Image (spheres, rainbow, N blue to C red):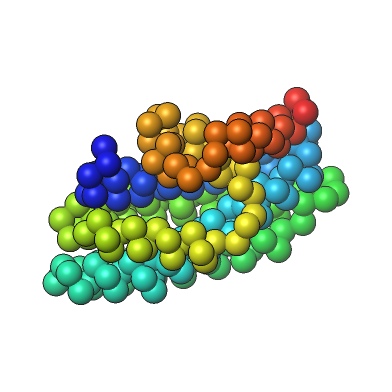
Length: 204
């Protein structure tokens, strides 16, 4: 599991599945009258930060790295960057949608639109990206990319990152991404994430 190519693919799949899951949960929770406005805001802000940082790091760090090592990938990667632009516009609409109040129509519409774009985009991206990671990205290059992503990601919703990674991955897969988080801290963040999710369903 810890060989380079497997790690790069596992981490990428896990993060993509997190994006699929979070965008789906937000779209469903936004339409739920009992969902806490504060919890919706937590989840919305976490998703916006995660996707914006993820796309920026792909466009400016990972794509050039792959293009240097894999001739012929420039065109499909450029198409993916164009989809990132569409996603960024959808993220702007989501970030501006009101959460407080009784009328959450704009929030629901923007969350559903983003969810659909995320799922479609990842269907386009993975057949290009995953083989490139397996075949062309070294251990050193991948670890360097991961360090840059972590440094660039604002500290927003760390508890949700832990909670959703543990939802979408096996324990072994989640351990790869969360390997630097001490077990007691991880347990506290997991509990905090569950509290947020409970308030999204009206159970908290």
